[in-house]
Length: 166
Image (cartoon, rainbow, N blue to C red):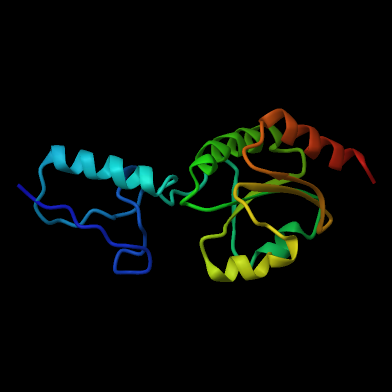
C-alpha cells in the first residue's frame, strides 16, 4: 500500500494536477491504495477543473509575455479562463473544436490562464471580470467579446465576420 502526495503549483513538481494523463509527473511515489488514488484523483481534478493540462488540438497557450505579439496580426480568438472555473472546462472543448475547424484559415485560436497575477495585469485594460471570456481580436484590437459559456456557432460566426471585414 502507498500514499498519494499532492504538490500544489509552484512547488517541487510544478503543477497542481493529479491525472497521469496530463503527461506530467505529479504523483509522487509514496504508498496509496488504488481505490484511494482513484477517489483523490476524481475529487482533486473536479476541483481543479481542467487540471492544468495543455489545451487540445491547435489551441495556442498565451502568457503575459506572448499576449501582445500573438494578437498583433490577423484574426485571433482568445479564451480567457481560470482552472477554478467549471464552465471553462466545457468552453475549452468548444475552443478546441473551433481550432480544428479553422486550421489553415489564417486564424489563431489561443487561451490565456488568468490564474496568474501577471496575466491579469496584462489584460486589465480589456475589463475582463468573468471567465470564461472570449475575445475575437483583429489586428491587435478587440473585434467582438463574449462573456460566459459561448456556443461554437456563435464564435465561428464572429471569427468569419472578422475575417470578412477589412
